[in-house]
Image (cartoon, rainbow, N blue to C red; front, side, top):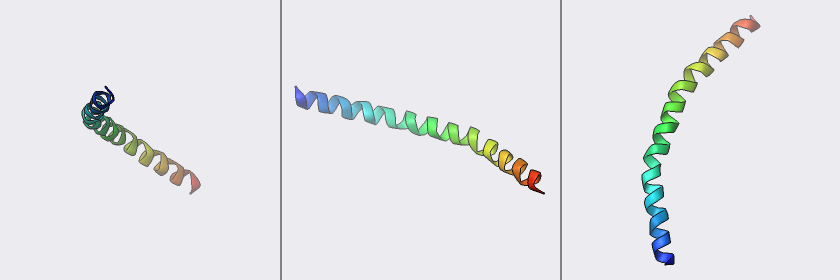
Length: 47
């Protein structure tokens, strides 16, 4: 029973990893330009 539970978790994690990677990549693609524009804005405010 414990063995089955372990394999079930292993399968779940293996299936979840690509999804997590995809979400992380999508988040980075959305957030990075936003952060860059914020940095540019603050840099221009200083001058």
